[in-house]
Image (cartoon, rainbow, N blue to C red; front, side):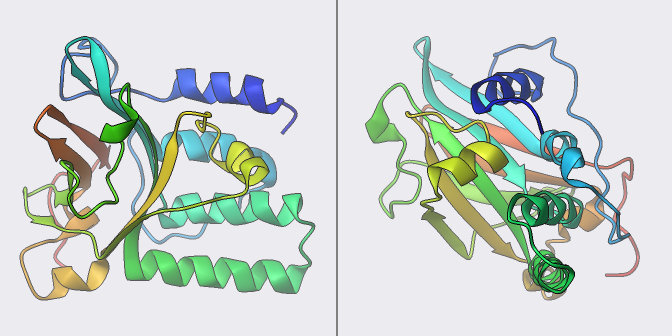
Length: 226
């Protein structure tokens, strides 16, 4: 990638599609359709920005003209992870064996959970506290049938500045980075069917409004392989 960090940030930030549940751009185009399948892809490092954009959503919760919360969420799908490995392997000059090991570990993680890397900021820094047990924000994952589950893990993550700017370029000096994980095993025992419904929504809700960050495929019905 030959864009500098600042230029790459502006390019990707402007390209990410905003579909806010509140009125922040009602005429915006819908986010791109995605592929939830486990079909392997062959990516090169230069494919990463396109794949990153495809799996990243941006929304803003507005209260009294200010951003109560602005979020960029990247769903670490299998498709995203394969592009990530290609970009990481080139950045860190991994040999073939190390790249294969990293790819397998990423595939295992994708099979075990729905994981999201969320970058957030707020006009009031005290409101950007999603990780706290007493936070006013509630995080859930919703499928296409409106069944929802709570995260198994959510935390603030501290990534090296250079790494975060290269792989998650929406970072600014005012943002905080979170990791949310939801177990895929939940859907085996209850009604939650996840991306098998063709839609998943990361919902961040609070008293000042909520953001629904939506990933959907062309499919409209759950599969029969549950």
